[in-house]
Structure formats: structure tokens, C-alpha cells
Image 1 (spheres, one colour):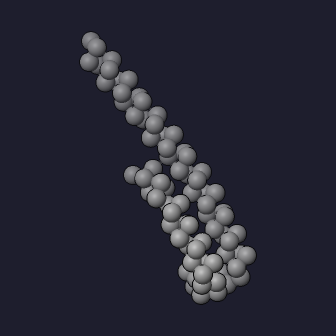
Image 2 (cartoon, helix red, strand yellow):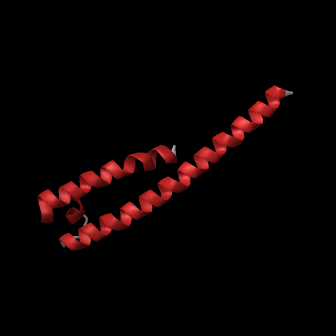
Amino acid sequence: MLNKFFDLAPPVLIGVAVDVVVKKQDSLIAQWGIVDIQQQFLLLAILTFIVWTLESVFEYAYARLWRNLAQKNSARFAN
């Protein structure tokens, strides 16, 4: 489930970035208290890095769990 959550996070971050470009000081991030445009983009860059890192970690874990499950099932059915 976390894998799919982080798969959907990048489009949300792109939407927030567009919001910053269009609305500037009235964007969603500005409502959180970060009014400076450069600081808003810095926050988005940090969030993007975190999301991509976590997305990669959970994708790896997902693939590894499925591979192990497939190996266990094939060994079980081969006997």
C-alpha cells in the first residue's frame, strides 16, 4: 500500500509546483507559512527527493517480497 501511495505522490507534487508558479504568494505552501517563492521551490525539491527515495525503497521491497513469494510457491507446487 505504501508503494502505491508513493507512486501517486509525484503527480501531487507537480500539481503543488504548478500552484506555486501560478499563485505565487497565495499558493498552498504559502498558506503553510512559507511565502518566499524560492523557499517554496526548495521545500518542493526536498519533498520530491524524499518521495522518490521512499518510492524506490518500497518498490524494491515490493519486488523482493513478490519474488520470494513466487519462489516459495513454485517450490511448494514442484514437490
